[in-house]
Amino acid sequence: MSRFSRFLALACCFVSAGVNADQVPATGKLLVATDEVRGPYFAQTVVLLLHHDETGTLGLVVNRPIDASAIKSLRLHEDLAEHLGAFYWGGPLSPSNVRALISTDTPAEDAVQIFDAVHLVNMDEASLATAANAEKFRFFVGYAGWSPGQLEQELAFDSWHILPATEEVVFAEDTGAIWRTLLLSRQYRAAADRMESGVRDLLTTMKLNLD
Image 1 (tube, rainbow, N blue to C red):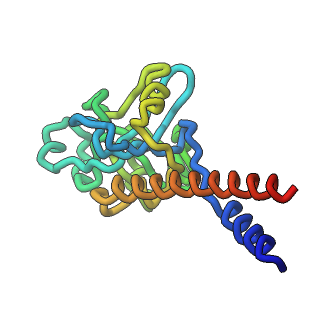
Image 2 (image 1 turned 180 degrees about the vertical axis):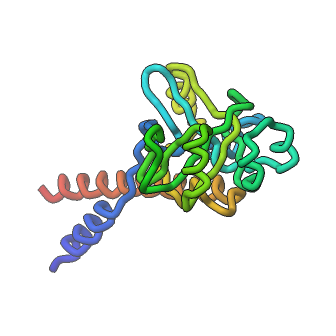
């Protein structure tokens, strides 16, 4: 095998292994705030998208646990008291509204699938029982929202990266490390994409020179 043939085979293997990030917002994806996002609400946040279409976008911030003392000031269902450690700040909208994310293969009838086995449930009696018995669950106070076209504008200004959601992220024990880990992952993907593009350009140039 010639030197060029060996190089071509190696380059093709690299290209096929390249990681392409899907930058289209959709239900079940994560928004990872870039360093461009500042302010008390969304700096260094990770948001799970619950809904996205031409009418707007809804999501839950998954990496901001709420202090138990703050939870006690809310008028919550008495059965929630034993789960104070599972409460998170979901976003600045409807701060008295509580909903839950659960991982279950047997969701309640009115549960909404977000991705895989992860479902969104509201806090009625039936859903509360389902959430409390689920293998993984989190309660969220409030939610995040974007008006029609607003998220697309923020994406155009590089305010967010988009990544696929996983249960390991949504239900992570160490929420303090989620943002930095995902940001570095996205930066690695971007570097891989740039390198893949460079390899393709190089192969094209070499092919033209050989013809």
